[in-house]
Image (cartoon, rainbow, N blue to C red):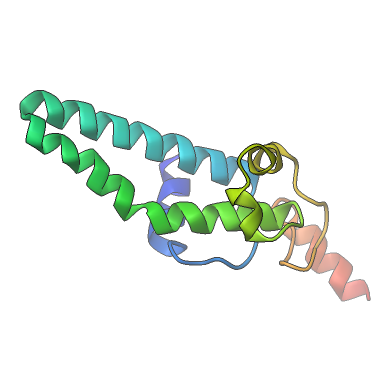
Length: 121
């Protein structure tokens, strides 16, 4: 779980290309939300002015959040801009990605199978 978070935040923090599986997207979202809430609550208990640390964290992961969302939309064959449409974006984030390669890249779930198919062509 932390490996996914590290990969999204540290290695792909500004990568808007490619595709992201549902597990990558939702694990990042879950961990980011938990960290933000814990930071806000813990530091608010210490001092109300320190409660802003959770907000600073949320601002720090804003770009990685948009990037992983765009890659998630790419996995279902849509532009990354679809994530800004409230209900439809959520439905797409929950939808299984397209099987096989699409215009945004190889299938992250079955990358080895995609390489075999490309080699046969």
